[in-house]
Length: 127
Image 1 (cartoon, rainbow, N blue to C red):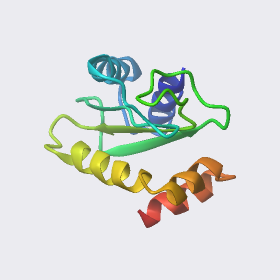
Image 2: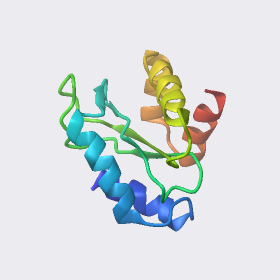
Image 3: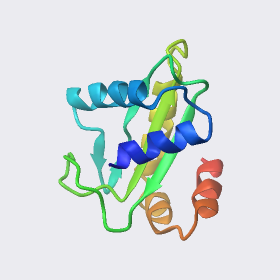
């Protein structure tokens, strides 16, 4: 459901052409190994020709989302990274930067406890 919601928002804001094709790519990657990295964070990601430009969508759920996680915590903040097929290593750079930043307990807690979309955006902009 969380992935569906993130993908739907990407389509709504015209970042992608086809929800089902992106979902298929995200779930294919997820089937290789979980993208719930632990510490209440998941970073699903995919490359697809339906993505118009590199984008990161964010979903926050203060109760946590049921997800197979490396440390068995439920993700409370989910970052979906979607990039076009021709974006070479853009998604890896985004994934690396986001993962490194989220290892910082204070930054991660700020994102999880943010009260608004604008607050999350401001924190991510600083990253």
